[in-house]
Length: 157
Image (tube, rainbow, N blue to C red; front, top):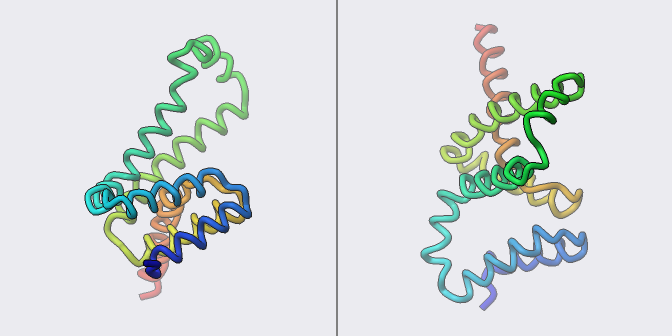
């Protein structure tokens, strides 16, 4: 039986195929298989609750691989400090990580914002060849923007 949820997922699968976005295709097929095999009842709550943390852990592992394989070491780190671009990258990494930390809380506590961020990420992945880290960074940026608007509003009286 094709429910609205399954229809939505099939449309996303079609978008993924048209856009040739392997990540979206794999994610949709994986989730549909969980649903159709009956494993979704147990897996979906876990994925929804812990998925972001699991994903961040996997990304962190991927980023650390060049260090553990010896491709990047202290020598490369010291050489990088001589480049202005490396300092920009360092600052950007710190900035994004701090923003994302606020985004995690927002994603967990506000379903309305989560829906908009997830849909925006799906569109970016499907249509613009984006990467699905968007909800976390997007939530952090949204959180910052909300705080700025709140602060400015409080100044007006």
